Length: 115
Image (cartoon, rainbow, N blue to C red; front, side):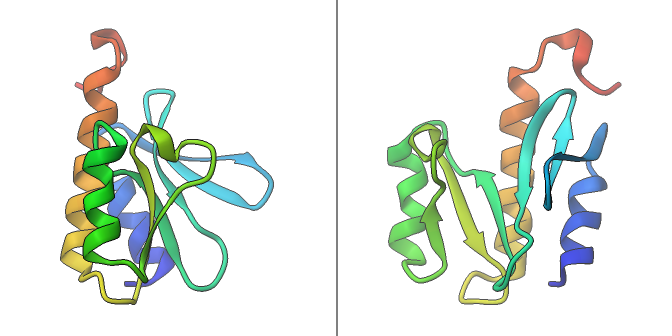
């Protein structure tokens, strides 16, 4: 999966849009909330909400110790960085994007959710 394919998949979600809140960093949001941090460096990675708690998100670290890591600052809330092109299959990355989007969408006020 390329960076363009990753971004396109994130933006295919209803109401998803691209933002650059920090110089050089691209994120995708639904409403005003981030559901994916798109890494700009090499190797390519994506930061996602991988569970409601750190314990749930840790399953990724156990399954893919070389390609999944706790995200700095927000990792305690269940966010992980997943490396693209490593041992994590693309379809699992896409499922993780779907789950992150759904988790963030659920927390949005109904008035801010896409129709």
